[in-house]
Length: 196
View (cartoon, rainbow, N blue to C red):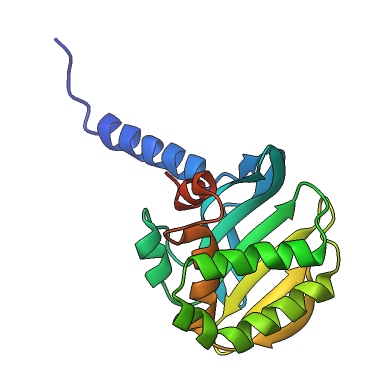
């Protein structure tokens, strides 16, 4: 008959918990692009909620990662979050600024009513100006769309800010709808960003 050892059970539980935590905190790799499990944005520590591949027709366009204050398992929960947030895009091919801006504008238009889209026109124009400041997005470029409270939405390329800061937390949530809305630019990418 086996004897119960009161030390072994808690120790085994602790080891399993540590292993699960270590696996959870590991970077994720998609198409050779490594995305860290956490990142710092201003004073906020953000969690990688999910990451995936954006394809268009048969082309691999970019890898996207979604960093949020808290992990969530639905688009609605992610869109409801406030505070610092970031979408990281690593380009897998060259894309000119106009094509990139047009694709994002289509994503905004598809996920908002005509009235909502019209109300965002000043912010969309500013975003387009920022994207044109990027010029051609080249293979390997890392583009961040990020929101910092009391600052606004900023576009960075390879760590360098491009264009002006766009005010309004609601606008960043609208930008997230490009990937997380009811009509996302890529349904499989949406699932990957949600982590499902």
